[in-house]
Length: 541
Image (cartoon, rainbow, N blue to C red; front, top):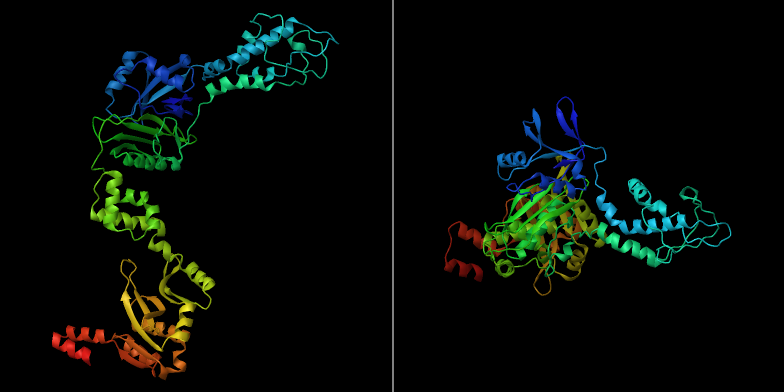
């Protein structure tokens, strides 16, 4: 319904400067002019001075038809397809289209009191020196104002004059004496109004004028017995849709979105015979997103197959639980979801839900790569003696930014612990990075402590096990451990990787280089020399 505007001819007839309000509870089968006027009355518009118009035709050639009778309105609604919007335009016959009857009824008590005071004051003129006055004209300025001026002028002298002012609501203390001849000669004086009077004036009327508006708070959503209510305000349509999903999922109900727009959202139960529905919208850009219609009762039972409970919903719903327990297993998660929502979750849905939840918490890989510079600086600040080397590819840029190529990290505590308490024996190896779309490989170097356990020293992220990447990694390692200063006391163990063998001879030529026995036996099996006899003799040697 369009109201508050006017019809303009430029060059075609159009309705401008109007406000839009949506009604989803208008019964077309019982439509009448009286029903239209009731809708207008809800909008605080005077329904006795309006005409109704119906828009039809095309966007390029719109036409308007005036609705005069109930039959015309019924024919218009009957011709509209089901679930389509009927646009009604309100023409205001008078310039001031707002309805002030509601405001007048709310302050009727105040008007009665002030009329009595005013009438009594006029009927009892005072002379100079007769003492303090029981009347103050200053209070009338709050009530005798536009748009209520005509109402007061017609009713101000209509009450009977009482003999005394003991029953009136105003207690005044005049600071100066004055002479009153008529309403035009009233002199303003200071007054003190009692708290009881103010409370009596404001308590009843304020409760009628301003209704309690409930603003949704997310902390109340998981409380037992929480219910939505008409008039409840939300920050946006996205918040409203998510809260409705959570509320109905916890009640084990399946719902569907009939209208899903940024300005209005209509939700119904997926069961055909169930009457549960909720509708929320915002009238214009300056209005909040508010629940307009809500039928809270379900007549259907618990839904075992709930379509709103998917991996995306579970990831957002359980992201706080995944933050506390990142190792939450798949079977445990499925049992928890079944007990909570009474629905069965598949294995793939469980894995996808956990993956998306971790993405909510940790961010995407692209976002993490953007934080590499900050991460390196934080490592240097919090770990004294730590070496962090970041290498970028300046020849290849994306959006004027250099591409990531390599990263080398050697923690100061690991380096100091190895040099002070471990033998000069190190092992080199590399592996592929799994689960990453960026690819790359991890190069690492470990030592052996006094308990024959592995002792991590340094690691690096590189583009692959290439000769250039191994050379860069060994140069950084030599700079940290000073291997080339006393090469004869060091021993390196590795596999027979093609890029690693020539690099060790080039960077650390005098270091003893030995090969891993497990990798050598794996190479025997790869070349066809398998069997238990060879394995036993190999490990005996």
